[in-house]
Length: 134
Length: 134
Image 1 (tube, chains in turn orange, cyan):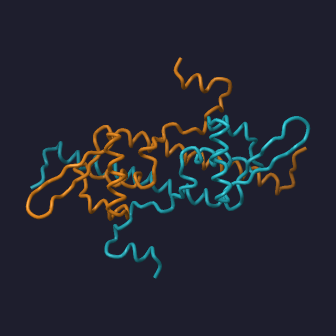
Image 2 (cartoon, helix red, strand yellow):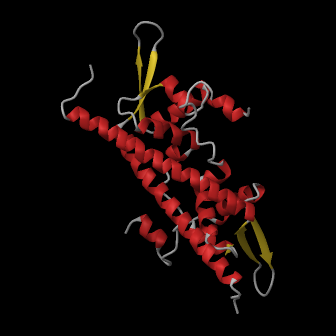
Image 3 (cartoon, rainbow over the protein chains, first blue to last red):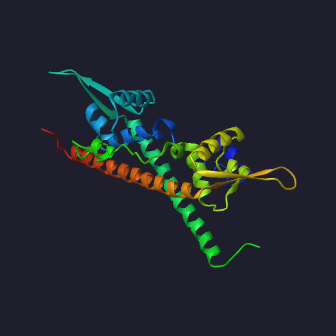
């Protein structure tokens, strides 16, 4: 029996909204934008293009890329041809897979929120129709 | 002309993946679970029920509730009847509205990620069909 089973014993609702699949390396707002940008580009994106897409400064983008590289989600390639060296950033295979799993959890959050909203609205409608709890 | 317009000048793609609507008070993983739980309950939830739904310790839940209260997203009511005092946590009206706006941005992230995936897969299919760039 895994730790997940133990944690959920006692009540079916326990941990229902814990969202353990929301990997913190991915979930941070700026990194979420970076990964969504990269997911469309199998061959990667130049640093400057990514910076513009995500409206980040050089310093901030560098800091977030370091976290993503450390987590094994992206890889960076530095090419030195004519002119200035160019950095290209791309998802790793594992990064692509983990980002897909993360997005599945995010879809679940959106579904849960929609269900919560319907439930709250149904309750409010009952009240405004004159129904009141005993 | 607002700062948003200035930031987006120069290129239509600029800031496309900045996701400025992802309010950090809401976006943090545990707080996202707390707010999704509360969104279903107009009359609020008891502290202990919330703790169980989100699989948080007393200390962690208290810490996150303080952030949410400070941000004006939730309100807490302490009732002192028979036995131990009971804390009930509920979304404020403004909290309910802001959570709805946040969820709209989350939906956009999920859509963007799906579009990115389709784009990357179309590229990979071209390559495996023998097409190669000049």
